[in-house]
Image 1 (cartoon, rainbow over the protein chains, first blue to last red):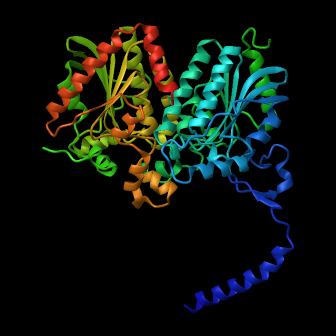
Image 2 (image 1 turned 90 degrees about the vertical axis):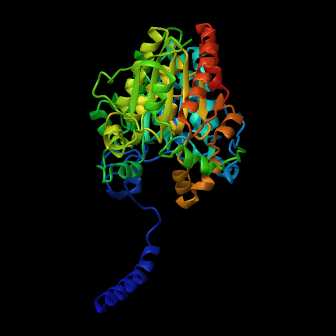
Length: 284
Length: 259
């Protein structure tokens, strides 16, 4: 017992001493990569917020991402009324908070973009809006974006990022999966191109619907992409699962995605794919 | 006998009851001449997903059903009725085949959700469900789903994207289990009963919200339940077969577009 007591005293002293030292270090100078655990200076993240060690792209808001990808962007579909379909307590306040935090009206930013002279409909999901969860307004924005793209004969580029269907909206969130699917199909049947980029994390109902319904599926390095959550899988299996089971690299190996593209190359790759999959009259 | 209204928590319990009507009983009692078809043509035959062709009032139909099994051995072999990607691929194959022969598709759903094992992830569980949603959205034949017990999230939706969804009296249809909802949102899994109420997962709530077409009365006598199901299927198949293909697809589209 004495041994433990001693240890505890040492550690208390240590913390006390550290406390003053910490005051002299600026906040957030160092950053740890959640994937490879490398500690590095924040400034090394660079413009594309990417781990210099393993290439993982840190979670980034839709407004930031649109600047990386598009030369020109006109936001649309921001006027859809928010609803609280199962009257979940605290939902309206949560939405308000998320609007402030993310700077967008819902979990997906939608608009018409130009990417290296290629015109497209662009949708980017946002981690600061209930982790990009698929709610009724998210589904409605995406559905209308696809409907508009079908009408105007535009390709669609979508950056997926989502914790899945938004459980605070109950069954209504599940219905969004099929509603968006129908709009994707009409767009597809019109011979138009749809490209998705799966980013960290893409899971649940979004993985099980529009994220995986595109003509070409790209992913970011080290992104977590899966259907079930890690804890659920481990409960099902009664054992620990491999760290990289749901990484973009594993999905690529298993034949589930077309390519892994780091952020600094995304604009160039997307523009190229838009050109290669151009439908006549898309650039009127 | 007067029936008192059940709470959401009671319905959840009844939906998961061991004596809940099984997939095999349903198929044997509602249809004639069922012939089972196996396999997804890619890798395996998922026992949690049964499929085949049968006669319904003399008319050929394609039948698909998730199967939880009845004995403990069966339940383990069927991973408790949670279909694998191969199961969804089999369902998709049979739906597409039904459309070729203009046969209506009848699906029975009783699953806690799509199987959440590591292999299911490696085989693209999410991708398979996404593909099923696409196939159902433009399937050129009527597709009717009956939720008989648990209608668990994407795993159930992957079989319920068609023209009509009916539920047995003691069944649920939900985006997430009440236990997981309580544990994630309230950090307290013991509040599952309250979560069941909050989530509005009972047939009555879902009917009120036009998520489903109707509720089928359920009896302790399984033959009676099957008769009630057959009555509903008869009416629904007749209604849907009267529509032209364009009307059928337009109505299916409108069914989901309103949400």
